[in-house]
Length: 420
Image (cartoon, rainbow, N blue to C red; front, side, top):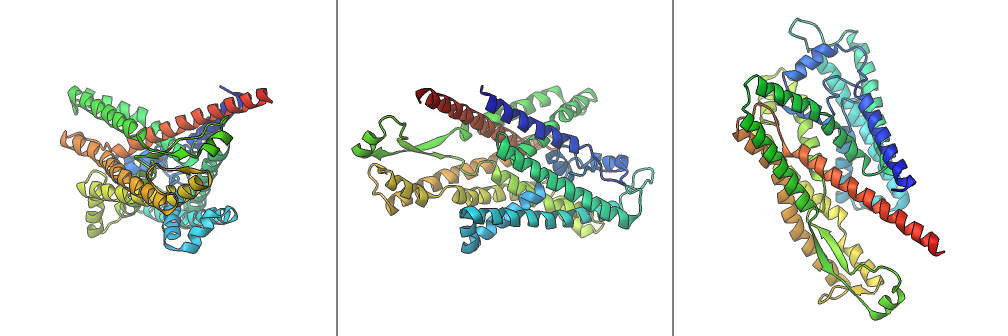
């Protein structure tokens, strides 16, 4: 392993450690015991899911309680606008325009974070513990100002950490932050399961069944994520002679799941937002809606399936540009056997990608909901969803691929230097 790769891995681990330390920095003026008591009683609804994605930062009311979700929400809004308005989509493709595009996302993130932080702060005003203690220990107006600034700072720090990991470390920074938050909750989940078995609330055979479900889910994810359709490509004799000392790829790899982990993250972000806001309401009608949107409800999982499928198609259409691939192939003197270069090649690639995306979208939707349905049918007294497993496994696979690619790059540079 090269020194450069080791440095990137250490940088990544260092920023993840910083993220975990921020999870223990509470917002000033909060009675943490009251907040934790509240979250312990809401572990099976949307608040519990939000807490899991934040790495238990929400139950401590940390400055990063809102996590990276405001940034993801802003990204969703901008992706939808870019797909709707051609001018914005063109800006995203240009080098200088991409910087402006990212700047708009950052400003939108600030607005969303302020709205959410003010809403959370006002909701805490009515929160009291079992002994009658208030969740806020300072003046209400002062608390709203201090907590809003604190949470905004925390979210901006997370956004910065994510960008630094992407640029200087290994892997996608935003995905790794979510990955670290979910993984950090595993020890407490194992401890809670052991307590349930010891207290007689869960049968040991049920635990074995859950482990089997988790292993089957992980196996299915790995199998599909490594699956791809390799479209054969031929090159003219002239091109092959010119590149005889170079490796010319003779196929176009099209993954079954072109969208990756993004659809599950987007769907979770959209569904958790209204469910979290409605959870603290005192209105009985809004509470009924909150129950329907609880992660432990069938309604939530139906919406989860539909949103995941939608975003799988939407994001795949953005990431896979058949027209650009066709044009690049034509410039390189390559062609797909039996398919005319140009528009016909683009149409063929689009049809192939659409068929794969159909099955990939169904796979993502099933992984996001089926494990929960099985566990629900077993009568397990806590929430378990495939989304968390999906994110953890996909991010792990993606990071390992990037480490492997970095190793190949370093070997190539070393061989080139020796050749010179």
